[in-house]
Amino acid sequence: MVQAQVKAEQQKQLKQWLKAVGQSQDRAAFAKLFEHYVPLLRAYSLAQEPGATLVADDLAQEVMIKIWNKAASYNPSLANTNTWVFTLARNTRIDALRRNGRYNTTIDADDLFEHIEDEGPGPFQAAQTLMTQEAINAGLAQLPKEQADVLHKVYLQGRSHQQASEELRLPLGTIKSRIRLALKKMYLLMGGQ
Amino acid sequence: MTITQHPSSDWLSAYAAGTLPLGQSLCVATHLEFCHQCRQNYSRLNQLGGELMQTLTPVPSAKLSLDELMARIEAQPAAPKQDIEAEGVTLSGAAATSPTKHPTAGVPRSLRKLIPAGYQKLKWSRISPSIRAAELCRDNSGLKVELLRIKPGGATPTHTHLGDELTLILQGSFSDEEGVYHAGDFMSCDQSDTHTPVASVDRECICLTVTQAPIQLTGFFGRWLNPLLRRGYTSH
Image (cartoon, rainbow over all chains, first blue to last red; front, side, top):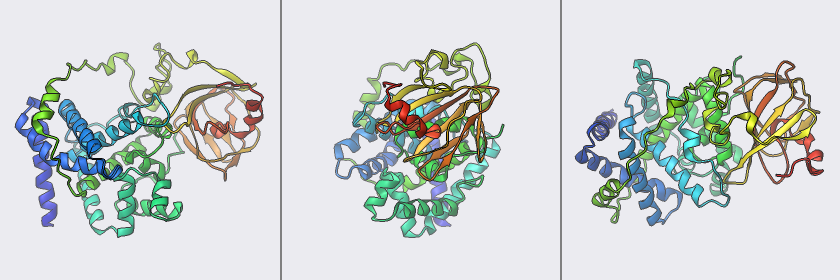
């Protein structure tokens, strides 16, 4: 409970800083975001390629520049700052891997994620987002280690199900069912999926 | 017309985590343009990603300084204003299939870069009396991203699939033993699937397919085309 309050306080603060950057290009607020997110972004990047310090700095820098450039379009009632920064980091990582990929392709992260229409800000959406937030935090705290490990592999280390299956020495079906169980536990999927 | 075929949670969570080959991601992204329910689930899966990232042990950088970053930000050229609404096209399943004057009006946004002048202007090649195909691109893992057009009423012999093959209906509809499928329906086929799709009689059907390129398969409409392909009807 105490931890939940700390998290909520911190999120409120992060939102204010991001808003200040978006509205008035507030450098002091940006410095605070830098302090909070850069070490996490580096950890996210290092999770993909352990030891690649140079790449981690590049990715963190690229994401921070996007935060600065796109802060004005951030809508706090649609997503909290952690979600928003995660999507920027994921997209940046996809493009970095694409540039170094074996095959050239014209498909980039913008094609994949930028065209998806937001659900429209509103009290209903904001309440939903908050409920999901609580379900995720409660769920993550209680998640069995075996499920948490698989989520970590896929979401943070960016491994495909097949790669996760090889690295964790588990059948592909087990990887998929652990993810499904974890998502179900956090009530993340509606509509019978 | 209700969407009945959705990406499974396996597909949707891998898409949100950013781990799918880009061609497969593109297919999921295009489905999301049609499907409110999956958009909602996707946004929850992003939330999970955001919270998972907070559980990482922070790794501070000795090298990356705020001053250096601010210098890079200031050195950026002024960003060109994005004019997304200039095309006057709204985004939804209904809008995506309603005819208007703009050549890309019927094309989902996620595909407009690959189909800049509309479906008609693509280079279509005939691969059977009732089916034509146009390759859009290859993705980062070599998967082939392609459109198929099936003539109204065009039937395909019973066939099965190899590997994961994705098909998304963009226009029109067709049916098989299991039911009727409409624009926005997302299908993932593997070797356990056997079926006989038939395009609906009133309208041609346009599909997006993402398949393994080296073995010449074409998604939902699959393997029966292979003999034709081997004889060189297409030369991509």
